[in-house]
Image (cartoon, rainbow, N blue to C red; front, side):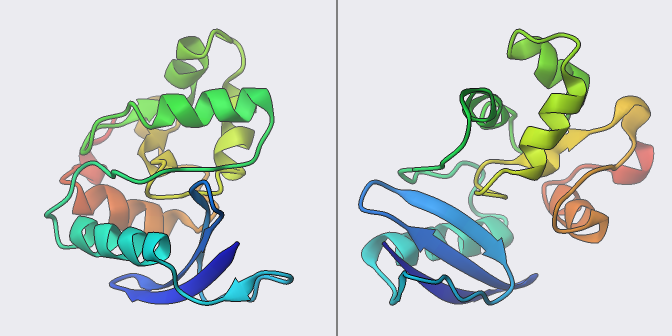
Amino acid sequence: MNYFVYTMPLGRLTIVASENGLTQILFGPQIIEGVTKRPSALTNTAATQLQEYFAGKRHVFDLPLDPKGTEFQLKVWEELKKIPYGEVRTYAQIAEAVGSPKGFRAVGLANNKNPLPIVVPCHRVIGAGGKLVGYAAGIKIKRYLLELEGVNVDALK
């Protein structure tokens, strides 16, 4: 395992990788105990693809992922990857898609634990009625990411 801190248009991101894929993307510079702070081919590729995303040149990420979570969390995160660039879904829609129609709160908790924000686009999940709710990095960053993708956030209803 290794990690490195990269500068992005919205600030610094700490990218963590195992031998199998990306394990975490963290907002801000972080120190990961027990993990070597050194860039790798994978963290560099991830940083390049994120820079392309922020420049509007990449809409889909092509990276090996190695997130750790419960079976339900992994199922939710897989569903999030299906939300197209520039589109949004509600927590209830994701709950329905993962076979737990009344589990929208559990979907919200899984989103909050998403270790790979942006690449696994939990920012594309909104509350009922188009409300921008629940983003671990804050609503300001959620709005930024959605607007970057061309979503008219003020028109969401």
